[in-house]
Length: 332
Image (tube, rainbow, N blue to C red; front, side, top):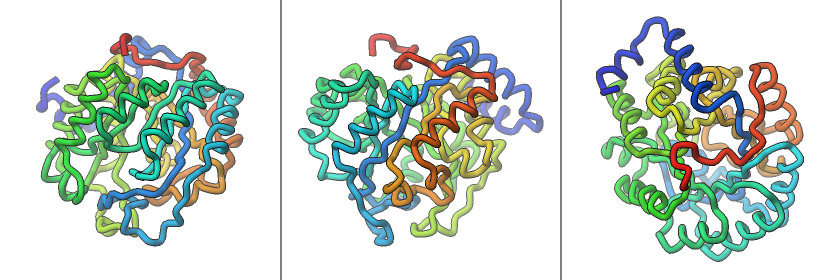
């Protein structure tokens, strides 16, 4: 598809045929398995000051925390019992977590569980990424958020889009499975820009594509901004991404449930094949809110595990029992 084709699909008055085609494409290429990747949000401390993020460095209302390694490892061991095959270790850009600290944590998780490991801890240098890969890191998630340099700068005043994209290229070159994606509906974004982000995502040849709607956080410079797009646009974007990335993993991200109680269900019916339950211990959950209305804050990890299995069963989907590694690029 080109930009014009994508715009035509985004403007469809009746998107049901698009959703059905995307679901068929998902079934033919990825099967009915949904892979469970449990997220542990192990630190909410961040040196960056992104204008939309609830844990930005300027938000002094956030109660800072770092989950001790032993709690992280215990949670990973529980994930195996819950039927998860991957852990996503996510945090703010916290300089406390040096190359050596996370190398030790990765090695310990690999030695005590069969889980695949995804890291999502921001922009680091090549030597650090290589050390983590050698320790056992399988995947890395780093969203570019928008491919428009002006919009990126307006949203990330202390960051650089070129550097972020270079990080993705470094990870790809060293053989790490790469995940990235974008926010839908940043302030001043147009449908034309959204179409360009969809194309840009595809050009990156990603192993996993994670997207979600922009939701204004009250303690940020974007607090008064509303999303310019309707929920149909969010779901159409998922469907289009599936059609032009038939063998990429696409998660039903948590933010879809924040805009619609059945949001993640709908995403799974419109092209997605990965579910990322919150496995952060309850004591920390309320302090990791990138956006308001985040679901599952008051549920235990056990409750979340039971809930997701029930959701998938009602959708007629099965739980993947392997690591769910990249199908696009098996060598990674």
